[in-house]
Picture 1 (cartoon, one colour):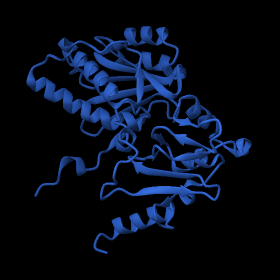
Picture 2: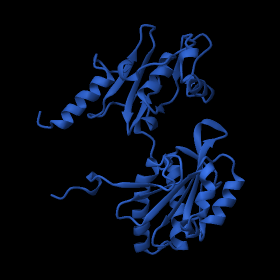
Picture 3: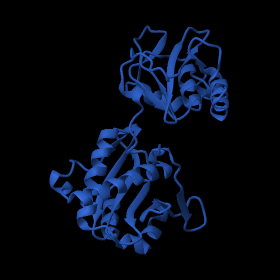
Picture 4: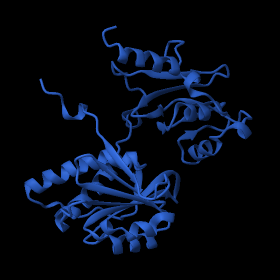
Length: 310
């Protein structure tokens, strides 16, 4: 039986144009003609000077959402020659911190291709729900009319972009964790492990790990005004969660309550918000109904993966 394609590893090539990690970067996948050029505001001029940017392609401007401190914003565009269009778009938008140009090394993209890619990227970003789009309305269906063979080629191109973009720090196409879209009372699936914090203060919280994110589930609690603000690196994040309605509490309530799921970047960030102080999430979170810490669970999982017959 042949191995499914998704089971194979991928080699992503990152070329540091200036030889520095913060300089202009070109990302690609071995054997793929696509090129993804990544610049910050400080290296934007160098991006515009690259010959690849004078080709037909798609571009993305990405940065914090001025209207929501917990979210990111993106603008997606296309052009016959990306250079002039991206420069104009960047000048019209002050939110962006990262500029990305997507083209090919063999100049194979046509106007029809990039119109299709732009429409699909916007559609996928809306579906993922991780960013607010600065595009206004989605492109019309006319932009997606292509011969069947060309559509198939562009979908394969998009599949590679879904791999490359998160590596360079853009997760706008990555679907939200399943737990972040389901109800709090959802039954556990057979292969799902849930974690909990049950603190002596009485606060209780439950979470799951999905795709590298630590999702605290609705109904979980967080300590209220525990007095550790000066030693909580995630104090500002917690205030934003309160301001955005992720955390709420009645005036006389002892704890805040998660009104909806929230995906944290690490178990320690989640534990710090729950316990209102800097916390080692690897030891604070334990497997539900067990004394096994998240760290011990990870080690056991690694041993099992290394010895599948055991």
